[in-house]
Image (cartoon, one colour):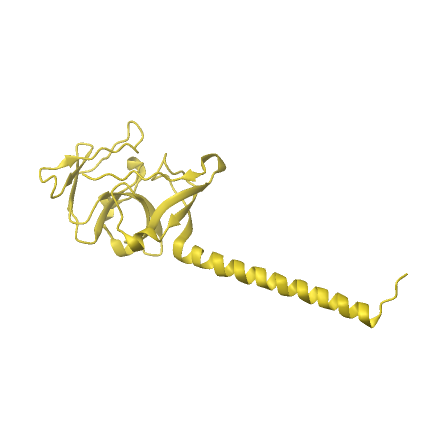
Length: 196
């Protein structure tokens, strides 16, 4: 049996302190790297509801890219996360359809965009919609200099700009960037971007 001597106790105490100090350093360095990413670059977001089916399902876990919109503006086709204009404590996920300065009209199950390039209007081609999807409504809205028109991909089950109007740029927090859950659908979220 080995006897504990003051020297052995001192060595053990030094090893424990060294271990604790190394652990503190690892945690501090990890937090210094992770926290800025978490709070300034990407945010996690859980999809709730059916308004974006079948591209985004209830329970999908996605990362939101917050940096891109610090450097540029949302584009048509982007899937964005924003504060709901009628209750800014809630976050919604929708797709950008109309850009600032444009007029968006919905009639006869079509989305028509009026802008400088298309003053007579152009029917929007929407390849991200499921076959048979319907865009109901009879709406015409002129967007201001900082306003966006957004729609859910599941038009029959979406509360969107058809109901409560445009979304101000200041309410948009970022764009859907990558899906992390469910595992069977982990992937970077494709950017549809197109100009008309």
